[in-house]
Image 1 (tube, rainbow, N blue to C red):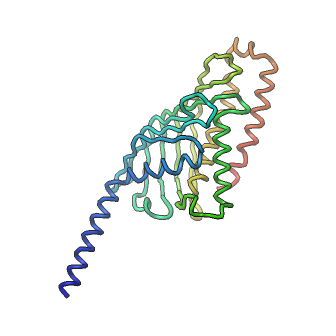
Image 2 (image 1 turned 90 degrees about the horizontal axis):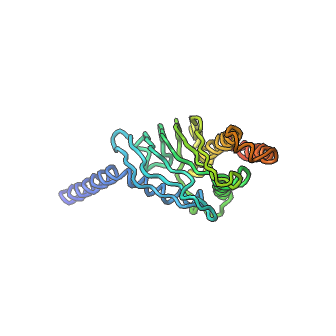
Image 3 (image 1 turned 30 degrees about the vertical axis):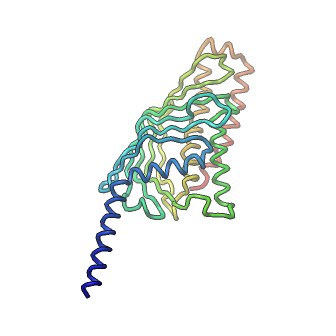
Length: 253
């Protein structure tokens, strides 16, 4: 009997230590998950400086998130977050479905490089689409992230876009995006895979970037005259193409 009690006591201590370790390292677990999954999804470099997450309240922040560019683009990043606050159900972090109550991103910076038709953001979106398609058809499920995610509320505010187009002739252009607010992502069923979540969020961002950039190009006076009628028509065609390319992203939950 004493031996049984001793074994149970040891097990209890081990479990307690494990729970404490996991709880005190939730931020590190999330950081590692992002840095492992995101590059596979976007096929670009992704780095995170730090993730803080309270094991009790589930509130925290992501600091220094940088989404790099695909090969062939020279700008230092495609997206860099200013401040990202999040609230997670801490009990769900180690479960099959991570429940994120809210994500609020303030002041992100985006770089769009190339042109309205072909650019780094479109390439990343295509990479994400390719990854999500492979998730569904892969013969080896172990190669894809197994966890699903639910995000109740996602808010992106104060986004600034640095436009680096050859058609601008080296002239700089900065564009402010309207707020992007998404709700109930993955709230039904088993949730969304990381790839599916990235597709919805990045698709929503891309859907705002192209019209905003096109509108701003038409407002810059002499620059608009320099571009000429042909460039404006090309911009309209690229906008129509972009709208068609991301429209299907929002047909499914």
